[in-house]
Image 1 (cartoon, rainbow, N blue to C red):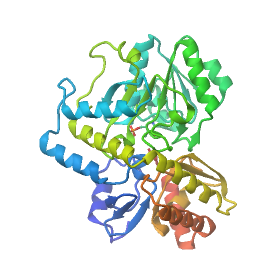
Image 2 (image 1 turned 90 degrees about the vertical axis):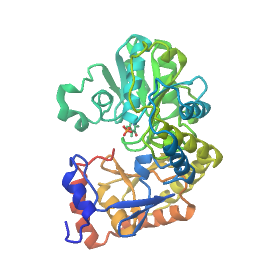
Image 3 (image 1 turned 120 degrees about the horizontal axis):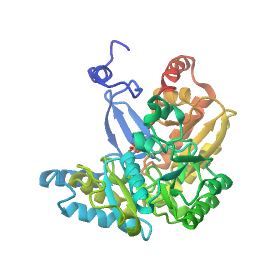
Length: 416
Ligand SMILES: *Cc1c(COP(=O)(O)O)cnc(C)c1O
């Protein structure tokens, strides 16, 4: 810590639980694909709040909707119908795959996973689940049971009860076939694994998951928390695969930056939950609903899915053109992009931030993940790629030293 450290950083470091490792900057403002720190320095933001700011930071329609709604009504529980909630449900069901027209509203991705778990149990009368190695489903004790990475689970021992979860290798159809039985309530999978290293599923794998679950009377639940809302070049990644699941978990970008979550499902799944079997105070609150209506309408009006598809292809093509022996693979779908290195990615992520003013995200120790707002321009993509090439080809010595220290810190940190 330096003596010039700001009072904001000092307070945050002092009072925070410290469970999340922190960068030494204080971010104060954002617009579109750019964020600014307290000193006025700008950054191209390929973190986007972990893939939340898909339509850009502070989209004017979302800002206006929040402002208007704040003056009318902030809270109204789900037992009392509300105009904004009705409007949001109509918008959401208007973009989900046909048949997924019943919605449980909540406030985060983790809560959406919890809801999915409970609805799957009551819908099937079964309690076993199939989840994916390298999969990420959230951090609550219930959602953690589906999360592969042992280091997220181990500190909590048997409190994370995954005795009913079978993990299969993502992409391995044989293992999938062996794992799905007549006791399986649901198969849970991300169409593109995010935290697990940005790994798009093969069409065969997802299609086979659909076929096998149908055959065995289990549900297919797609975790579209990170892939949903135009991130991959379609409104939902499921559309790339021509598959309609029985349920999808949604959150992150759904309300343009405001906390929100949802489990969308078929009527058949929804109708088997006993009345009062699940709930929550803030789910469907008018503020999040107003933001969500504005965000979904903006995605449609501005053709965000198509933009993500085109810009993603451009971004990946440029990344693939980088000449560096340190790159093992560039992969992704739309604007969900990962570059796997042959060495730890943390020093490069650190150098990008400090030397180049570009924010990126780790996904497994070797991968640099890019989740920019869909509003990112081709010029900004060029800037990011040039910066990445520079840090790969010659991190300057001073930065290298700092980066080593930061890497040691970031190693223990989480990106989500
Ligand atoms: C972020 C994420 C979650 C957890 O969502 P939170 O809003 O952080 O609770 C679950 N699954 C996937 C695929 C995610 O990317």
